[in-house]
Image: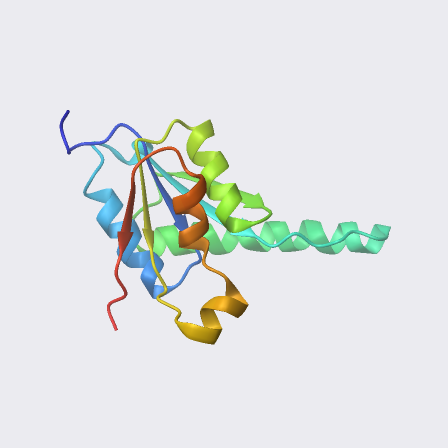
Length: 141
């Protein structure tokens, strides 16, 4: 089994600087941009009324635009772009299975202590639930 290139690589992003590192690393691991799937997971909002649905739709369009801009800025417009809503760790693991990812490349934000307990760890959740190998990149700061 060869390490490079991978047929399908998944990169979950939160549009942070750490996401840029993961995106750039993943781009080196695929033969062509269409083999790279970039997933942006948004938080679910409880819908209560017609106005909430309109707001939700506007937020979804804004998220799609932010993701497209982020990818264009980092010369990755040709990758597969997806936006899902839900628990990030579970959505990442579920989509990795759905697209039959050979590898997930993701950053670790490196929270420690109380911040980790309060915020949870998306990376840890993906490690527990994903069925494919995961490359976790260490924070640069």
